Image 1 (cartoon, rainbow, N blue to C red):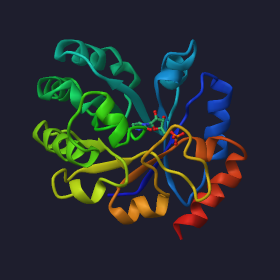
Image 2: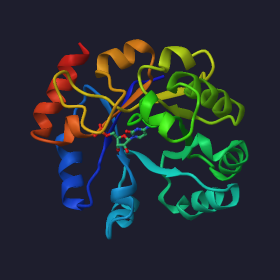
Image 3: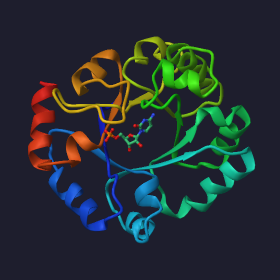
Image 4: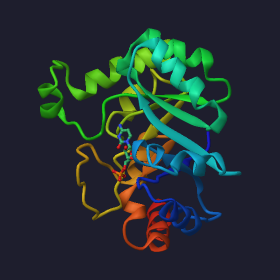
Length: 223
Ligand code: C5P
């Protein structure tokens, strides 16, 4: 399995996305582009994505709804022919199965527990399990639904690798010294890959400041 770097294009500006794509071109990394709620909901975002050619495209829709609505949303976005699409595992087994059934060639990615949550913040939402144990449970469900990939922080990867045997994608990635901001379970790119992640998601550590320099920092940090 190749190591992918998904760059989170978290902006509503198509100009900024063009800049991100242009300045992250390198032969040294396998890069894909992740579009989340901000860009997908922006005025020109969807059309822009429909015109992207020869790039790995990751639609971070983060579906979280009843099975029929989730499956209908997957059908509605089908024309974009994205490579990856996300659904919260907490949507439940039936929703995960329903989405898989209609997904075609798009890889369905199950989002476990958001990397912006730690044990304390998770407890506030009513969960009684620790983050680690909840992610383990979610990995089992993702495997049962035969999802193509799972999202979790680098901290849980070693515990779920033997449970979920397909692609593991890790956000909450920071280059050494970068601020965690709203993320709680963070890790460096190198450590995440060492822990067993197949792919990482990088947003602000790459897209804020000097993008080309940040890509060079990333390449250097992986050596
Ligand atoms: O800027 P930063 O690197 O923190 O961005 C992380 C990206 O990954 C964001 O686009 C966020 O929506 C996404 N993500 C995440 N945690 C998850 C799933 C997705 O941070 N569990």
